[in-house]
Length: 85
Image 1 (cartoon, helix red, strand yellow):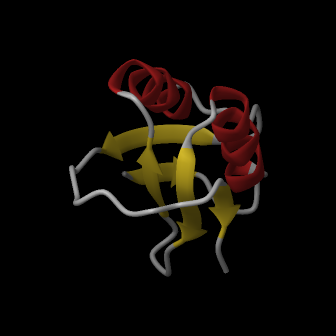
Image 2 (tube, rainbow, N blue to C red):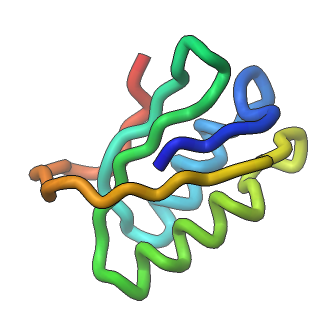
């Protein structure tokens, strides 16, 4: 997923990680140079849909999500969900 809006410097990555941990979603999240946030997430379809909905609603009250682009990629072997720098 690529998330655009006011999503950097507002706790978005850490609240997204909390959401992922609660739902048992694996993957990574990182800031992009253009101000967007990039997320790779994997879980069972129903759980992943809940995670995407939570991202669209913005897990951080200080953030503002304007657009979420979801692209399917080959599955990777993640162990948990990590904030990547």
